[in-house]
Image (tube, rainbow, N blue to C red; front, side, top):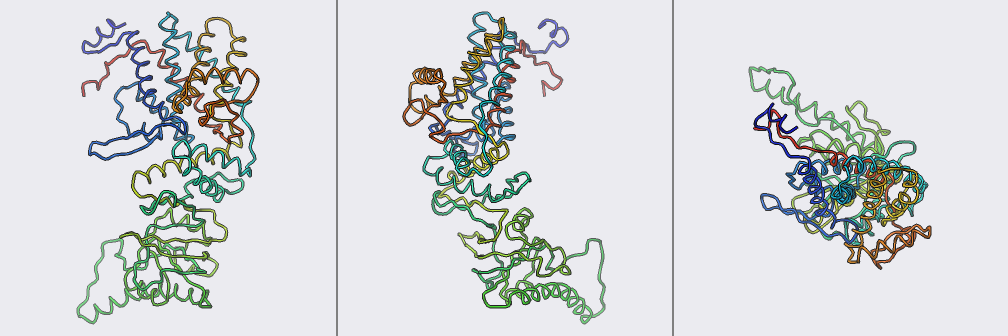
Length: 532
């Protein structure tokens, strides 16, 4: 084959079958070695250093694989598959890389004994189908309103990214945020949870706000800073002088004509402002009521001055996404012209106040009646802490959403892997004849690699752990690994659960990638663009 390629292209670079196979295996093992210390709550943290000396601390597999510079083409392929896993399900990046690495390691054992890669690949395919079927039976159904179970799911996800105390504190905020935006018979849109960051105080001050935090404030010094019982006008009206959209000119022959022109231009904007002020006077009938204008377009200085004299707080150039969230949080409608102004279009908020942090201004809209949008306000003393919290909260939100979508969970702490490995050995292998049993045995052994790594990262002996787990499993118990005591433990008692969709996606993608890599017998560099 190689001579055939070279006869077509003398510059072609060819890597033979054994070299190609072991290059793939070594690449998978290399990525596996990098990622395995991250797994579980006791996993270690990686420090990524950029070319300009910027530093990022993380143990999130998705962040690592996205930001690490990987040059080996096989490792790049595995990393892309794992990142795609995160895009689809929001978790399972590290698990995908580790399962692919374990499958390649187990295959290497048999390949060195002369077993053909095709035999192992066929065994992996049989084991994959059996494992996915077993997962369907092993999952546990969950009610959509089972708040305690949702807490367990969020806590399990957050503890793998943050220290235990902080993860437990954020659990309530994450669960409440998803339940706030959940609407009956509609898909959950996590974009309606605004994640706002403030470099201020400690990470333990992170909290959920059942309302909205806008990252800008009022642009007039005389506007009120704290308001209660607030009517909220959500609008997309230009309250400033606008140039015409076509090329045009205004010609005048005297200063009086110019003054009339300026006055006419000003009158158009002033009329819009007066319509808003009239609406405010109509709804704010007592001294306890206040009025807030949030505008997607601009508000000029004269208009701000008029609004400030009426005691109206006005925010200009709000983001479109925040306008959508504000409407869902406070109620009311978004108005596009002053002709549509009426009391029915207004939203309501119990409290609105401005918080100034250095040169940054934040506006808090709180105490709304029936919010279907909310904000998780992440605080931290430095950028590293805030970035870690942000990644962890995103994963926690996805975990709770997946649980509500699937209405099912899988016991965690390695319990599924132990049970599935036992099922493959005791049932699947008896139904299969021939050499495919080798691939099934390798697959079962690869699954046991996950509890091994959990034990190793927690400072316990991995071999003792695997033997103890297998003995407990033989008695028909649901058993996982307790990282605190180092002993087998029922994950139901500890409240450790994994998402069903994450496990299913890992089982479906990892064996396919491993099989494809095993069946590569030559690596050719003979493409048209190879010299560019």
